[in-house]
Amino acid sequence: MKSKTAFITGATSGIGKATAEIFAKNSINLVLCGRRKERLLKLKTELSKLTNVTTLQFDVSNKLEVFNAIKSLPKAFQKIDILINNAGNAHGLSTIQEGSIEDWDAMIDINVKGLLYVSKAILPQMVERNDGFVVNIGSIAGKEVYPNGNVYCASKYAVNALNKAMRIDLNKHNIRVSAIHPGAVETEFSEVRFKGNSEKAKNVYKGFKALQAEDIADIINFVVTRPPHVNIEDLIVYPTAQASATILNRE
Ligand code: NDP
Ligand code: 8X3
Image 1: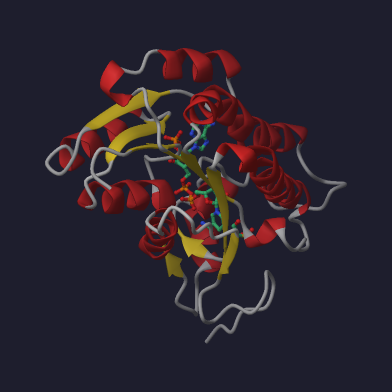
Image 2: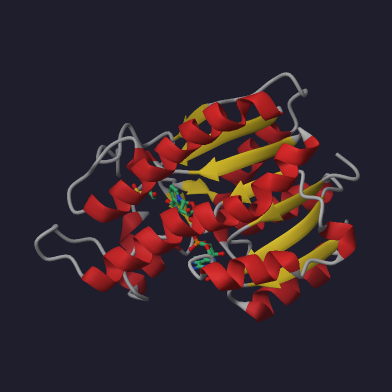
């Protein structure tokens, strides 16, 4: 994978960070993205020992920031071979009638529009070269609606639809498109969903062994290292204790 460059959104934490770490071990050059600058710089310092790294600080839901940041890439990182559309989160967990409009806006703006803005900025160069790879991080929430999940689920159903749409539209341009749909992964996800309520966040992963960010990163790495004629379309990944979005075998 030497001389390939990956662009990872949401690299400051969880699945994105673990993906950056495994790609670095594979000598893939990295464009690490996120809003938290200190974390980006810390990760850059660590991973620069293994590969070439640059960082971009921007909010995926801010159209201008997305396009300006990507335009500002140093020459050596402008050719993107692999795009990992990973940035995203849930905001809140409540019924549709009680949900907060601010939370809805955040999830739709980040999980759906953010993924579209970043893709719009990067896909044209892949189309021009007739080569590229897009991995979209969906969720089991994009396959199955669960109680109180309403708008988060809708945002991930949209990711599932966009993944299929991308594969159809980009097919004649030799661009591979894959989606990975994890079940419960122990990251900062629940801290964000419950707005910093650590007790509530911890309870999500209580009584069973959740997936770790590294488990998903390992699978992303497998997907992008298949031979050029192999495209894994869609993968659902659960912890062993999980049978569906709502069925968990807790101790
Ligand atoms: P984390 O909260 O640990 O990581 C989320 C990442 O997204 C962070 O790096 C964060 O960076 C970035 N991000 C969030 N909002 C924005 C924004 N507006 N602009 C730019 N970057 C943003 O969660 P996970 O690693 O678990 O989540 C990664 C993806 O996996 C998400 O799409 C999530 O929906 C999906 N997923 C997670 C599951 C889980 O159980 N954890 C299961 C299924 C799917 P920063 O704050 O620095 O901007
Ligand atoms: C994250 C997994 O089940 O909390 O997408 O929606 S879930």
